Length: 147
Image (cartoon, helix red, strand yellow):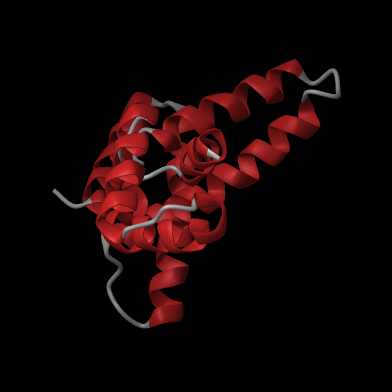
């Protein structure tokens, strides 16, 4: 089952269950997917949908950050629930240990001895070989700890 099919199925279930938060979050994502499909004039793949999800999660993080400075506790909890819901659809990223092992393996394969000078090459190879499987903040943190 594709990611789009899963989101559509979950949206229908949320409507039947009258889960307003889940329904509104998934409805918004489905609208964003439809808009992107029209913009690109092609069917979207799971990778494209993951990018849409990540963009929306980032926007929700900004909303959460803003709401934490106010007394709007109910809206804050709603945004946190939306974030958790959307994160469910993201592919599982490599752990810190797996990321470190990947970086060490790439360094030996590419013959990198000075990570500080060749950091960009390592990041480029990680992106080319692992794409969305690696969380870039974790990769960046691991590389900084290895310097």
